[in-house]
Structures are given as structure tokens and as C-alpha cells.
Image (tube, rainbow, N blue to C red; front, side):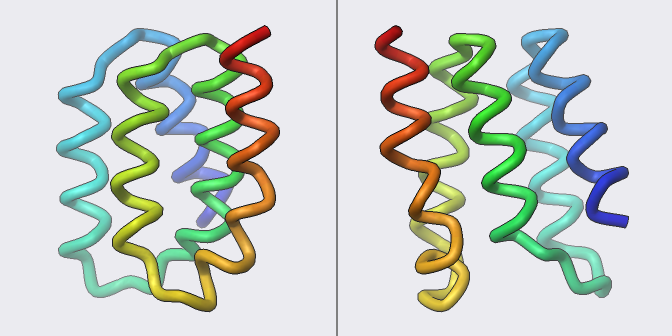
Length: 88
């Protein structure tokens, strides 16, 4: 399931559809299914940074701040790499 979610996010990023991403995040947050936000954040944030899509990267950083502490610990390793990719 996580791979399907990542694929959908990547499609939104490739189409530069930030409103679609916001709606998709809201839908996932409201769903009853358990979502592996740490895994999804890592994959989607790096993809946004590779595509130099700063608005999406900033939106994902706000989602990162809302994640539970144990998920932040797992996902924070990509923050520095993402900043590097954006500056490159």
C-alpha cells in the first residue's frame, strides 16, 4: 500500500499539483488505514527535492513537524540530503 501512496504523490509532484497533494494528504490523514508516514515522507520528500519543487518540499516539512516523534527520528535523516539536492 505504501508504494501505491508514494507513486500517487510522485505523480502529483511531476504534474506540479500542490493542491492535489494537499487534498491527498488530508484524505490519507482522515482515513482509517494505518499509513507509514516515515517511509512515505522519505520517498516523497527526496523526489520533491530532486524535482526542485520547493513548495511541495515545504509542505512536506509541515507534515514532518506533525508526525509522531518516533517517526520523525526515522525520517529526519533525509532532511539534510533534501536540502543538499535543492541547493545543487
